[in-house]
Structures are given as structure tokens and as C-alpha cells.
Image (tube, rainbow over all chains, first blue to last red; front, side):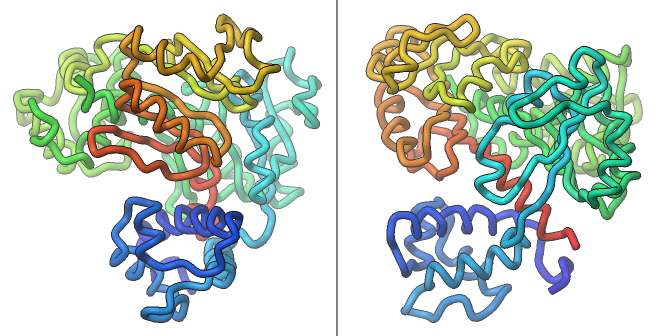
Length: 206
Length: 206
């Protein structure tokens, strides 16, 4: 199925559904419904049925969804039934925390190389990684065919780093630097800036 | 201005505009336009003008926006011209990283207390914080009038922690636990799960 068939907004909700299904499975459930999922996620059951209908044949009206089956279907659609290799650029406070975060590997995303430009960081260990010179990143990314990178460098360096790794073949970037990146149309970027999330909420506080 | 006047989707974009304006100011610019902002952010200039028009009088057609003025206006609208105190619940790998992340205080969000339930963590220092018993969280939150909390506990504990801190007066939660929370309508929750962002992108990879 080509990415053009499904609106990005639908794709953006699938990982949330998958996470809820994995949780339900952990809790020992075998079947769920759009209503139960909706209650857990604060999304209308109609929305959930509509989203899942893009992929067809996941649930039968009335009988609900078989969790194991739906989970595997979503994993395949999202291409997370396989493991992915990730290059991490930036080994400062934030990069080090990201490199140590166990939640990535547990869910199939493996940071396999860490790069930094600072001479006093290069060669040091972060957990199981030896920090490599950022100038080696393009070669490593090409040789290993790495498609996903995380950027955790200062804002003023992020665009330059993005250009470098995109030229080496990276197609998906998780950007922790607090700045928007300009990338070609075939490259996907997601942003993590916790301060933006806080600022979305303070508006509502009195 | 009441929160009902402005759609949440507009509010969600204001911190992105604010971040871009702060960057432009750092770079020494004094004036910008909806076109320049749009180019930097990958948002249409029409959308930006429409969003900012909710607040009125920010820019004049043709002459653009005065960055310093617009930045201050957005800070006031978002209530981030003041500093905010944050309680952090959970001092594991992730919580420790969050507690050490400098980006919060630099932008007016000050983690002033850290709580954990594990006896071998309580009393230990994270950076400048002494980890306090989670059972003390409600009293500390009430006494200090803390309205914002970050949750970095395991998924299976997150709802229970949320219920506890909401009962103590928390109205905004940044949730790092990989699970959706059920909260009252007057409580706002934002989620940070980097794996969900990665899974949104793998769909598009070949």
C-alpha cells in the first residue's frame, strides 16, 4: 500500500492505537472494541473504526477486534515488525540521555552509533557506545544503510547536521534540537521539544 | 481572553511561532513577515496570518511584524512571560535526564521538586535536587501551589500518580510514561513518547 493512500493524520494515530493494543495484550486481553480503545485514548470510536477501515478486514461489526491480529497488522503497516538502526548525532546532556533511554531498543529502534564534534567527547563511552567523530557520520550511515537519525545538537548546528546526514541517505529524522529543519520532500522530520508541549498548556492555566 | 475564544489547534502552533521569533531575535532581526515565518516553519503564510489575527493588532499588511513586540504578545498570551514551577514524578533513567535537562529552566520552567517511590532513590541527589518520597508529593504540590507536573514513572503506575497529583491541584501534566491518561476536563495532558514519533515515520520508509 502506498503512503499516498492514507492521510498523514490517520498514520499519526496508528502508533497510538498500536501502543494501546500492546498494553491491552500485556494485561491479558484477547479482544477489544472501538469503544474500549476510544475510552482509553480519548478518541471517538467512530474515528477509530474509520481510521482502521483504511486497512480493511481488521474487525467485524459487533464482534470487535482480535488484539493479537490487529497488533500484527498495524506493526506491518507501520513497518515496525522489523528492527531499525538509528544514528544519534550529538552526545551532550540530551544526546547522552537519548542514547541511554531503554525504551527505544525495547520497541525495535536500536541506536547503533553516536557522533559528536567535540574533541573531548570523541572516543568516550556512553553506555555501550563509543562516541565517534561527526565527520565519520556520512560514511557510517552509507555503509550501514541507516535511514533513521536522531539529532541532539545545539539549534544553530542542527540544519547543517541534517543536510549532512540527508546527503548520506537518512530519510527520517527525530529532531531534539529546538529549531525547525528544512528538508527535501522525501525526508520526514518529527520534533521533540518538551518546552513547546508545556507552553501549549500554560495558556489554559490561571 | 478566555481559552474558549481560540481553537486548540491555533494555540498548539503559537509556541512554534514564539520559538521561531526568539530565534530570529537571537539572529539580530527586528522585523519579520508571515512569508518569512512560513518559510522557516513549513506553514503557509496565510495560516500564520490567520492564527495571529486571533489576537489582533500584531502586524500591519505590508509592513510585517515587529519581532520584539510580537514575541512579547505571544509570551503573554501563552502565559510564559512568567516563570513556572514543576514537580517531577519519577527519578529513573528518564526522570533523571528530564531533571538534568537545562532547556526547561532556560525557557522559564523550573523543576523544583523530584519524587520517587523507590527507597533506594529517596534521599539521593539528582543534580541540585534531593529525591523526595512520592507520598510527600501531594503536600508539596499543595503548599507550593504547583500547577504543572511531569510524569516519568513506569506505564503501569502513571494513572495512579496522575490521580494523586491532580487531587493535589495539578492542572497540566507532561506525561513521559508510554500510556494515555484519563483526566478531568479541566486538566491538560501532553504526551512525549519518542517511539511514537519514530513509528509515524517508518511507515514512509522503504
